[in-house]
Length: 173
Image (tube, rainbow, N blue to C red; front, side, top):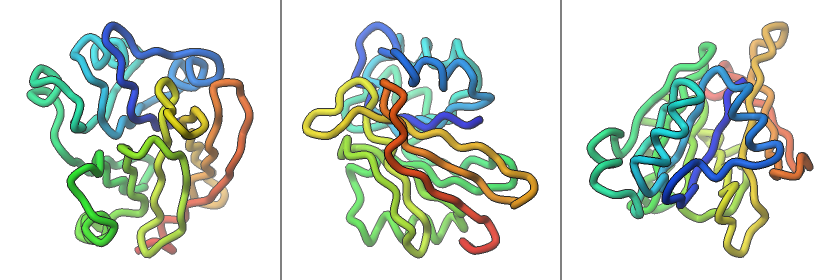
């Protein structure tokens, strides 16, 4: 499983609880769309396994020096473009996804979880620890080898699944 998170806004640790903690522990890899805030939080995430993170507008220099502003991650044949999104308009985000030849664009910043099946499917996992005016959330992706697609879900720390989606790499390109 791939755990997808963003906007932790922690000081000392990854602020994991409930299903979010279970998902991060079970994940073979983690994607984080920025705003870890401190190196201690990044270190805590890295203690669970490989982290493909990007920096956000609230990350300290210690975090920004360790993770890029944007990146492309390959997972099970899926190309995932990751950026925090605070410096991008919707058009710029779409262009970043297309220029990256991505099957999925992961963004954070707004703290609003959601999935949109745009030209490049776009996932915002929300924030599991600092949801602000939105529901707390993270995303989970499982690879379905029979369908050759990623099956995704948006999940609250309580375990409630509130959205499901499919990403077929053949459709996205």
